[in-house]
Amino acid sequence: MKTRLLASVIGAVATLLLTAGPAFALESGEVRGKPLGAGLVIVYYVLIPVGAFLVISFFSALPSMLNRPRYRPGRPWKHDPLWFNGPDDPDSALAGARPGATARGGASAEW
Image (cartoon, rainbow, N blue to C red; front, side):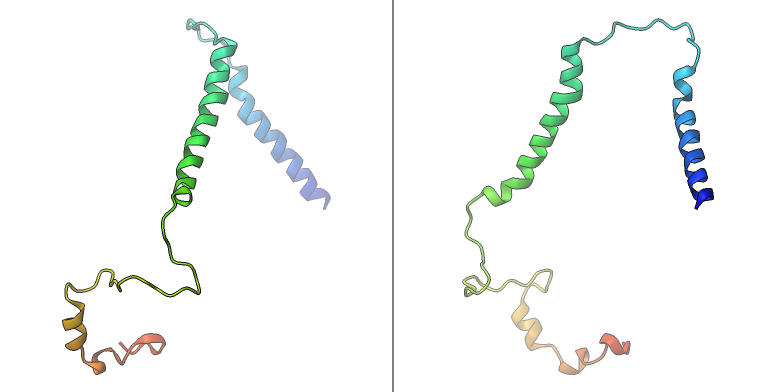
């Protein structure tokens, strides 16, 4: 127990020193620009992230805000059947299908 605690403390201190190391670097002589004012700091670090959050929230809530008729469980299905990614003419494909061609496979792994 004590060795885990000691290892955790040493790891935390090492991480702190390694990440704070660049802050103690000597100045390289380059000329710094003007500091940001309080207004720009608020715009950059508060208003822009909040605005991005609101835009993403709006677009994620938009589909539920649209009042479209949709299927509710327990009610009858009122639409034509639709075969996704199937043949162009599903009736002829079903009429020409052989029952023996699809009788194998599944969990038995007999392909």
